[in-house]
Image 1: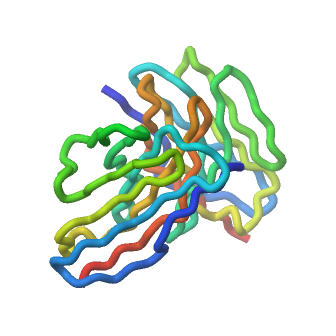
Image 2: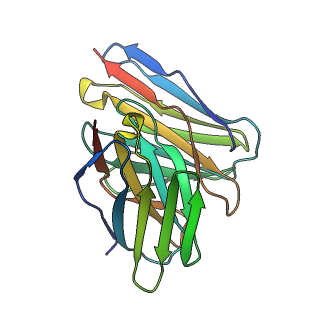
Length: 109
Length: 114
């Protein structure tokens, strides 16, 4: 079956670094996405990985290991506005997104 | 990134009426559009996938006669919730992609059925 696992909730301190992990099992693979979603809003695109390795984009970086079915989103220099849910999604062979349940990130001062 | 516009952002309708939600790709041709529904405190649930010019493919458990999807052009898809009931109240989100690109999301539509 198809499955995406990520932690339900994480807490971190303003200015620190946090890593949100995601493991996936999908029928075929056409990339791994990370989205940020603030309450009551649509998700916004953060990153897309289809090759192994680390992609850095400002304070956010995303890593993929296809052989391990594993990805993580790394957030540096955390700001209060980073408090949100972070959704991991794998695109399967039919180009459909299989979503994780999301990780609620709580940032404390 | 590419822009996907969803309209309306909020709608309130009476029980038994129908509501149409539009999803437009503003600066690219969307060969595929996806419609999602989000229940409170849950992840997005894919409802259906539509390719331009063909019938939508619905996910298991989604009533295709209730949620009518039309993808008549490369820039527009519509979702019509027919005979809406209070349990249809939810947050509906579309996304669109062109070929092998990533999917871009609309702003979402909050539907409240009273």
